[in-house]
Image (cartoon, rainbow, N blue to C red; front, side, top):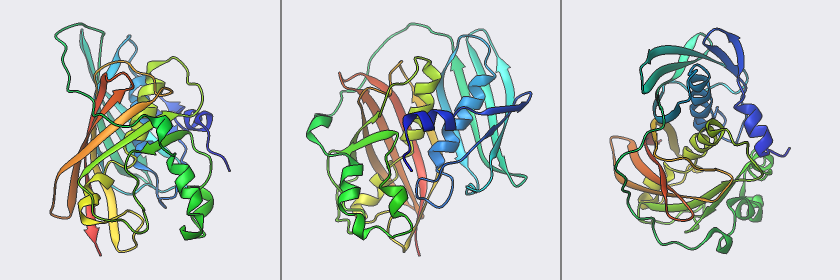
Length: 285
């Protein structure tokens, strides 16, 4: 069954069920549990729904507490912590089975100007010179477990293109650096929260794999337990996720059965629009 950008936007369009309370549906992307990027993006949407002024998210910090159950909806409770002259702060708790599975703090700011600088975008091949991850997975469909094959080879709402290809079933040691182009497949509405939410969704895809590369490990290996523990995003400038973005990630450290990775997201012209940091469980069974 195809998974389109329209389906993704519908997934992020939460149902209001009470004041400051929203409900979201789930979509399986082959992980066996709710994809962390989905909970992150839905939490951001829930928080933004309670900000009545013209303010956009500039940062969010989330902790993943329990695995999400794909079989039931997620309920999001939003606390309106503060509405100041320039900033609004929200706290979101995601609930399933009466327990918190995720919590997040998010901050929203009015548009302001100030000093500007940024790091340079890495010099990498353009996305047109690279195959999509979906093409590569379809080419090795016979190596994908039969139960996962329809999910992993279905059409997707996002096009991911890795600069250095990695075999998920037989990885080789690589430096802890990863470059990936990404773009929504299809047109997106102009509302900034739609682009921020889709980028939040995409930002959880593959970043922890950067910490696995030096050890020739892959999330598809049965002897490895991998899970996101916390995730943070800082939005620096407006952007469109239906235009190509480069996700440049590196992993400075792994220790204590945890891997740490950070990312920079650039537009095609080299403008840095967002920064990401994530720590995840990396446990060898």
